[in-house]
Length: 126
Image 1 (tube, rainbow, N blue to C red):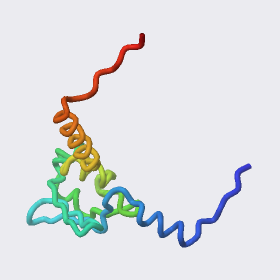
Image 2: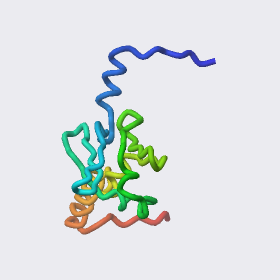
Image 3: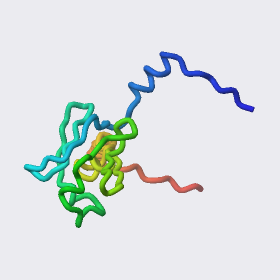
């Protein structure tokens, strides 16, 4: 049977630095703008019309009151609707893919190869 190792402070510090997506610190529904506002741990504030989120097209404004963040900042929970949304997926839907840096790196490599005449031809086995 596998032995369970208790993580030490160094392992916890590494895990904190290793996060891959922004996490939400706070969520609230702004009645004036009729939008949900997410405050992220990156310092960025994001506001969106909740009716743009899948499944909430017919929801009423009072249904968005009491929005909370759960799951260590990874889940937006709307208690009146009993609905949960992934913060990362919401951001991806509004801001584009979260791996945009990798996509840009691939595009840059492709452009460099194009300047050299494109991808090398495969040599057929004799």
